[in-house]
Length: 294
Image (cartoon, rainbow, N blue to C red):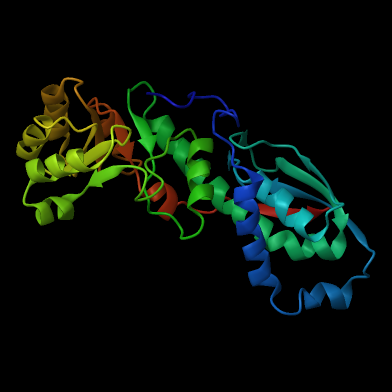
């Protein structure tokens, strides 16, 4: 169930590149927050209105690029005539000093858009970079690295796109696109069997059903009701291997909990299909990228 190619730049089309219609409102909201009521009073005070500026967006550290559309949209929102050359595409690995984009624009507009462009580009590239590190750790196994809903409010689509740029795949986008029965749902329903029976009776045939289990006894019970996916929450490596053997390919198995860069390969080697990692979006460090005048 691979959705990416290891060791190669993830093609933008394979990454299901985001539409400007989705990104633009996020960029404009960020610009509105930064510009406030009076706009960039520093630029207005210091820079002639017709001054132009040429600059590059360049990497300070190695990583994987994601979010170049945010740069383009932020600058064009303030200077529609700006000339922007995208040098490094989404999903492309870069080294320190690499140029991501070249810009020639009205100086006031460029400097007013700078921080929004860098914030989004750095955030998304940081997620892509961390995802690529997890993917590299699972090379040679069947496991696919996936994200979670532990995203920054309002930025989920961007952050999940960044995961794909890093070679990972997406879990559900929200509460409305798949059934995921967690431990509290099981408790509220009175057990695994009851929760799965009710879910199956309620949703249509196009909706996938996943259930979280935290021990092998619950796994055995869940298998009797044939969910599409079973999440193995905080299972030991020994129990993960036994779960894979018990399941024998009948459903997709997702490992979750206790996953970091030191443990992910051992988890992948148990034979699970998916490994969900909340850290991809809630703990990824920003990739250091700067705007340099030329």
